[in-house]
Image (cartoon, rainbow, N blue to C red; front, side):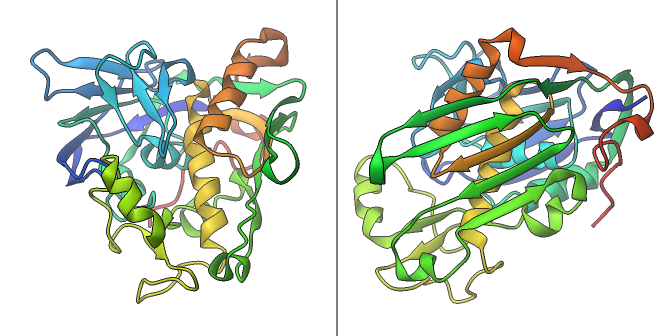
Length: 311
């Protein structure tokens, strides 16, 4: 049986939120089968549980934000995509995340620190079958026309692969790869995707901070770009780090389907908002997917049943 996974023990992290700048403590705990990933706002008078699910997304400006019922007025948890990307990359199904503020800490701006934390806690197989969401027909969402066009698509595929293309007319970005394809079954998530950091433009910093955003951002956790070049002294971690971070984000956003996908995802200039629209369109059409399990690893798509190796 291809089994569900959680972690073996507790693991903790302390950091700041990239937008709010608040200090935040994160405690990751094992969770029972079929519970999914649940955030708990333990800083509130009464702890509020917020399940990681596409229908609970209440805001997608700059990051993916969840609330208990998707309503914008209730308690929230912001910037969940990097942690959820790490969960997807390790094949985790169930996790409790205690958090002491509204925003998941940015740490180094990638998913690598979350992968390290989760693997240090240990991965445990559970006595319940992993339920995959198999895409049965193409689902696509589009916005804009001409130079403003952006789209995202899920197509049938017996595995899980992602393709993404960005389109930035900027010297620092156009000199790097702006398209990447990645197969999750390769087992190379940690090596090829997890270390890609979020990025932003120095010209946008003042505007963002006037809106109460980016208050915790620095060159320790963001790739900063001026009109001509990358300002971080250490440069890029990958030649195509910008588009790889967009893949990292998409993996986290798509984790919110509620089950690991058997699908081919492709996108052009997509972001958190369009990724969420894609999942909502999928979930609204029960004929577009089926839920499947595998009674043995050799019947599952290559690479999706194996435990990720240690660092």
